[in-house]
Length: 380
Image 1 (cartoon, rainbow, N blue to C red):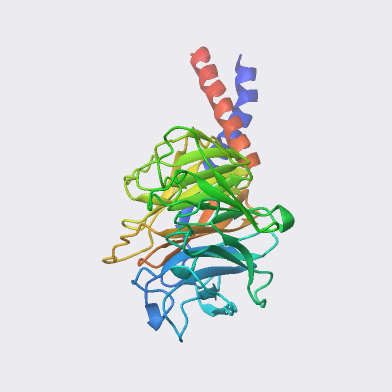
Image 2 (image 1 turned 90 degrees about the vertical axis):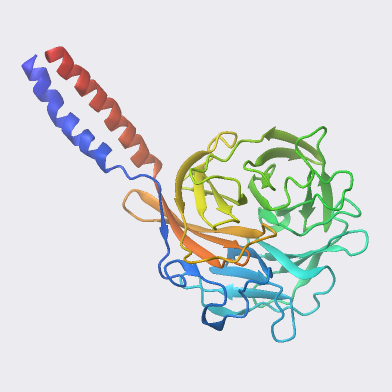
């Protein structure tokens, strides 16, 4: 019995140490971004980021962060700015020639897997002003009209949010219908195919989802699933095929700080793990969740890089953008996370996730530690 105890001692100690050193998911400020991870409204006199409800769109692509602003600067309100992903410094703007129409000429943004940039206008009624999406093949391109029309429902309001997935001819964009004006089908969302310049209204039978449930926060987990939010402390997780939508679940957001103002959504995978970022349009705090099962989000971490008193985000608008995965070489993978809550600036975080092998080793360590504890009880 003593020999068995000795043989078990070494692996118990080694794997116990591995378990203790297994790293949890962490979320920390990207300290080189702005000041302490926060680019505050108007910092340094920056005209494209203020407190006038003009900045609502944010995306990452081609090694840059893109900011959409309809603030009037140098005679135009069609501003799409390129920001340095490490510092937030303005690197210039995209060409905006030929952009016309809508309540706001530009409002929200998504980037395809091939680097194509898509920017949507905002229209309060597609019956009187077309919903438009412009595309830039490269940052040096002149914008082309990728889509112009009703977005599938005449009279709907569109452009409050935009999300996308895929690349090239397989690119899909989604935009949530607003609850106002009240039109049939506004409890769903539009799916836009830039390659065919067509839009399909995805509808649901019965309620929920309720009118406008996909109008503020919107993200795609794959080419047939959408997560959306509006004015409640939960999100709608839906699947779609053609024009038919199915509400899979409406899980509550388990935010330890309270989810009453949690609206903004951004999905990604880090080291193969499904992660959902959720941003508050109240105090601007941001939380991340494991959504391996999207019907049961599990809280992982939260952060807030803002300081002082914030201007209210009365419209509940903004957007979340994820940077690419970076393998750190220490058993973890990181991705930068960027969030904008209108009137409250842009925050940047570094989210670090243990790689699956590290998680598996930690689990093995826990199992062996349990066995060792059981062995000690037997020896007694």
